[in-house]
Image: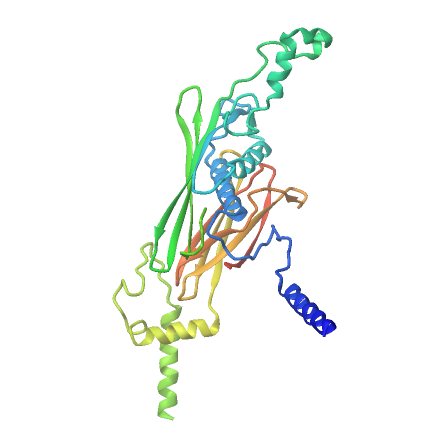
Length: 208
Length: 143
């Protein structure tokens, strides 16, 4: 009898294991997975791609006097119901702007709230220079004063979300990606773009 | 025999009218513009069914590249949706350098596009590096 019970338990254990969802690695390049109500990497890829193409196509990043603009990333507000690291968007944009050869990004100035925008080591090295520990270093290897280059352009923006009841069973979620580039000397805005990603799905889906 | 002739005549008339494309800058869509002999409440369902049967879809009519003022290559694609239904698809543009090698970029991702039935559409892509000299574009069904 005991053996019989064990057999039944083993049978159901195998059955349950067979039904378990297999974990698979997403094919990031050609993902044919279903859309989700929340923002996923494909939405950030799309928004970043459209933003970069618009920036480069507009000619706003081309310095008419020659050379390259020094650009910093300002404040990017996440006003969605999701916990988003805005670096998901900005890292792609910064990378492509740098690779375009038209601008150079600065790590000396940036949004204090955005982790990684400012390289703290720039200031740590200067603290060493100005402290007693600085005597331990070869003076020529320490940065002199007034070497940092101030940014000329700033990228700032906002990501926000609107939830709308579509019908009895469905909801519509609209995500707005808005970015702008401002000349820090004159305060003039050189470029601006909005990308909208809309999703419609079950009321049961949670978009945060 | 008479019935067969009538069907053939109807099919010929339908084929001729369906081949007609508005070349004007102003596009008046079906159900906005006045109905005509080949496109009315009676013939429309037949035309829809026929279009679906022969699998009409997107057609690319022109792909032009030009270098913009900032020295980036721009691709302008024009096409026409032959189907009566709105076609939603995704496209990806990859950029190639002088040696024909792929330029890795975050901009080369699948982007959404759609074209309304029996309508022209346009797409624009900008190369991420000035060294891009050519491109390749791929499309896939919108999942």
